[in-house]
Image 1: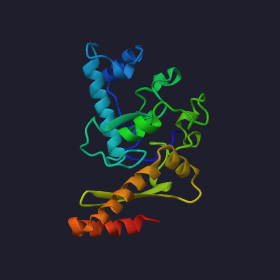
Image 2: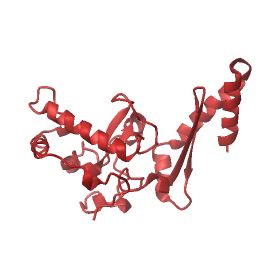
Image 3: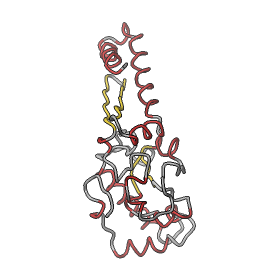
Image 4: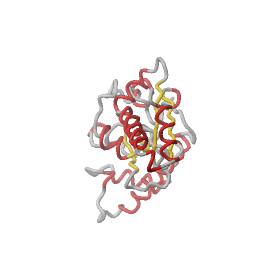
Length: 220
């Protein structure tokens, strides 16, 4: 049985007979996810991709599945429909539209860090293992509950954002994900901004004072 850590459940995602037909047809092409605008089923594919996006945004409360960045209303310039097992790898191309192999991530996590990497997969050939949490070194977008491995907190004051990723003791997936996606960088960037705001306290007034409190809180 497939692992599943969120609701609505993966098994609740349904494709119509027409959508299945379209997917079957485009899977026979070289780039089924990226059919060109002149393809007869281009509009159908876009609709299916949008349906997948909405489903996964709902499962993750409009957050990136890797760094928990809020993506509500962000649009396609910030949101990526993420393929855990990369669609560019021929062996994984049949999973291009498979719901458990898809998730929602921010552009930073997907394009700067995840890319086409597969080194987080323990067994890349066993198809049954593909649907199991323990076959992935990172926190899987569908098979692992993020908060069981990493607690994420974020505070914003007058444009200054400070966030913290607390890795749960004993979770190897937490450590791996923290390093893989350089979550430390997100913490440091926010902390540096808060520290910069402190230096401008006389100019910015109460906002800078709030920033100081944030920096002191998360500067551990």
